[in-house]
Image 1 (cartoon, helix red, strand yellow):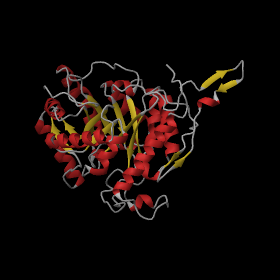
Image 2: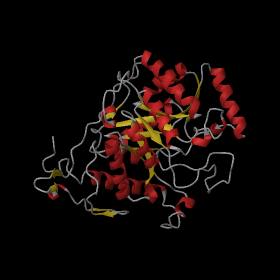
Image 3: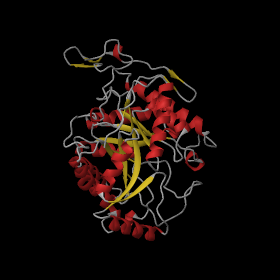
Image 4: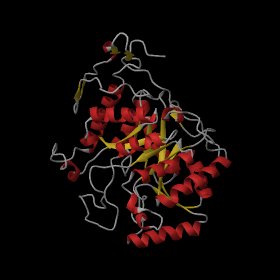
Length: 404
C-alpha cells in the first residue's frame, strides 16, 4: 500500500520492507496460554525453551526479539502481587537469558528489558556491552520505568514511587549515562601487544564525569566499547500513552514501541513523538516507531476466534490488553500492518497470544504473506542489529580521532 514520505530523521512508511519484532514472555501474552497442550510449561525456566523460541523467530527473518522482565512477580493488580496460582508467575533474568541465547543464533537482534528505576546505569551499561560482544553486534536494550510501591520495597531506596515525569527523567539520565559509558573506550583502546607489554592505551579510556539529578558517574566503563558502538536503545510508551513516555522515546531512544488501538491512534502518537523530537533538535537523527500488537493467528478467522475464546474460558475472563488485539488470519494481519504503516510506523512488535502456536504462525504464515507482497525481507542483509534497522554505527563522542 502506498504511503506518504517519511519526515526528516524518521524511518517511516515507504517502499522499504517492514521491520518486525516479537515480544517473548513466558508461554505467551494470554494468561491461560501455559495451559495449551503444546505450551511446555515445565520448560519455561530452561535455556532450551528460550533458545528454541529465538531460533524460530530467527528462521522467520525477524529483526529482533525482546525479552520481558520486571522486578516483581507478574500480577493482575496494580497494588501488588495478586496471589493467583492459576497463571504463570516468575521470570528468568532477561539480560542473562539473552546472553545465553546469543551464541546459539547468528542474525537476529536480542533486546532484553531493564527497569531503570531500581538499577544502576553503570551495571546495565557493562551488561549490555557484554551482550553485544557475545552476540557480535546484535544487542539492544529496552528501558522501562517502575512506579509501583511494591517493587520499590524490594530495594529500600525509596519509600514511595517518583512522580511520573520524574521517573521518566530519571530513565533519560539512566540512558545518557549508559550511552556515555559505551563511548568511554575508544574503538582502538585495546593494543594487546605482547612484545611491548601494552594491553591498552590508557589515553583512550575516558572519564564521563556525568552529574545529574539522579546519578553521578565518573567512569570509564570496565568493558571495551561494544561492537555496534552504541547498542540499540528502545523504550515503550505507558499504557495510556503520551506525555513523559513519548518524551523519553523522542529524546533518548533509537526505537520506540507505542501502545495504540487503531491507525488513528498510531498516527496521533507518531505526530506527537515527531514534534517532541523536533523540539529537542533531534529531527535529523533516525528513529523507528513500532506499534505493539497482540496476535492470535489461525488458518481462518473462526478458528482464531474459537481458540481465543477457549483461552478466555480457561482464564475466567476475556483477554484485554494495553494495546490492540488482533484475531484472524495471516493475510488479514498483513492487511492491517500495511494499513497501519501509513500512519508513519516503520515496524511492529508482535506479542504472540500463545507462544507455541502464534510464534510459528508469525514466522511461517505472516512472514511468507508479507514476502509475497514485497513487504518483508527474504534474507538477512546485515550482521548487526543497527545494520538491520538501517542505523549507522556512531563514532565515540570522546575519541579525538575515531577509528575507521
